[in-house]
Length: 564
Image (tube, rainbow, N blue to C red; front, side):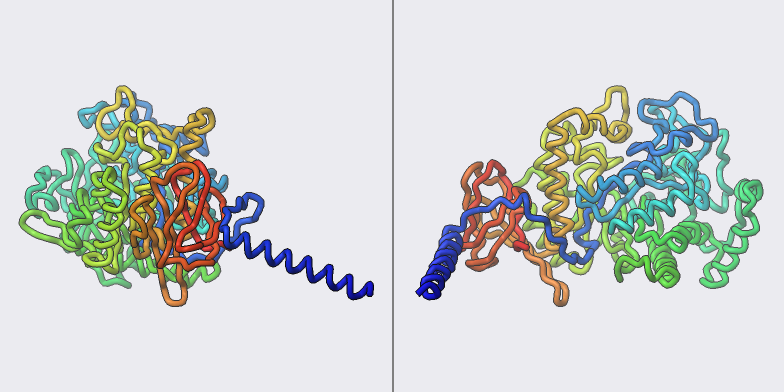
């Protein structure tokens, strides 16, 4: 009798437990999962959906105050036109601190770190030094203001250890301006006039970008000698023989003529060969003969594969070398070719996987579905097999979206959820001011990173938290940037993204402009009834019932993935 009674009790308990689970499933009650550890899924990296962080090396973080002044760069400058101390060591600090990881960043692009002109020049906006990195003096050396080769090697290794790719910003179009300390390069290397008028192909390429910015003869195949000042510099630094020997081997292997562009291509791709740089962000693309970019890509790809063979244990994945180009004013609506007026050039045919898209900033105030549908359509038709890098703020775009930083939450939603790769400009995520008193022109976009506000202003921390949640979701799901978009419901607005690559499939649902409190999200046709989902924004688990999920929180956004 005792055995029978015991069995009956056990059966009753099991039945009650089963009934409670069934009722819970039917009610689909949201369950907070703060105490449940996050599951790390194996996620492939795809450049088409990358979350790229772009920063000015000199303006992000000062990791080594001992290198703040070099080459007696002590002259007074215009506001925000001198060096401020940011360096490679500062970037490394933030990688190690997990700043980029918490933001969902999986690629970092920083302004050029090669040696800049030593002098300063007046651009009409007050004296300026080459703090921004685009005024090259020597492509074969790093500027001590930014750091050393050891620093750069450490940055790449540290980033790779965190699963973050590194994009080197490269300049092939021009040298730095001529100053008392920086003589002009030889006349068979550069032209010093005319200044570009940007009305035709020729007046955009065969000219100097601005006054006093000597233009490299990138279309020439005529052999040239190395400039005497560069040879003297190498000799003084004890590396003349090594540099000349390497050049000899390069030209013997490639068969390229000793024309100006091929010297620079060799010097730029050395960083790939030696350090394992993952890709280039290429400056001033439309001002250079397009064939030069195909040649740069060919040599960079060779260097990347060479590095991989030498470092098999450090390879992140099998992605080829990546190049994204800055074709100023290129917009995604134009499709592949860029129109010079008298000639169209498809830069995607010359080594570029992506071009920077200057159009999102003008789309950003449109309805979400209008933006997302447009980009999905173009990326799966005119640009199929290629991609764009979207941005809302940049270092030289004087008309960014939300210059007054009044809409930082919408900026995050648009930038991080629009199909294509995203480019966060340093301080987008902390509403760093873009209007600095006394600054002129693009300098106002280049203030030092507002770390102090992040520590002292609760609203700045709240803004960063929003960017982090969206960025982490984007990084975890290639479907967000590289997947197929579909609207599931108009009000409240709900859409899906799905990405497939072989056996890998990624599916997510996002809700925007949701009501506060109780809300119902329509997911029918994408996630079936009984599917458990997890809202990464509110950290809540829900179950699909009758084609929808229910949430009850004060958030106006939901980021739904399959529950772990």
